[in-house]
Image (cartoon, rainbow, N blue to C red; front, side, top):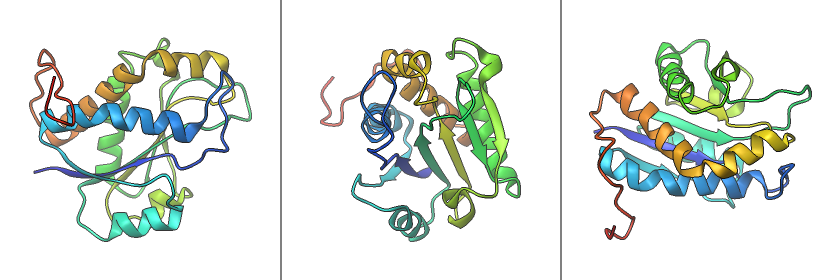
Length: 186
């Protein structure tokens, strides 16, 4: 069975151009992923908003995860839009996972050409975790256009992230099935 470490942002100081912050919206997306993860049979352990990056890395390394998935948004220095999907240049499995996320985002992001895969050997979660890690900056938090898109598509983004996971793990995922709430009620 596939098992992931789900790592939504802990940064409440990264404020969105259109209001709200990174910690709130990345955790909202992680919350929306949970019913889909259950349907797909993917086990997960999730960080807590009060954790530090060091806590997150230690928790991820404390068990055998098939993938570490970090969800963030970053204010870009240049005017940049779209998801940036970072992965270790030294881990083929991380690159495969990153590609599966990218190909699914191509179908929902308004301009698929702005969905980028970027090898990285500097992000702490990428270099210090034992599991292959994919670190996704979903939007430019300084952009009204990007943050409005994210806010309007929380559930679509969550579902798309799970599609990336099920594609990576080769898990059949019935997209017509309705998600089950965490309490088991529809």
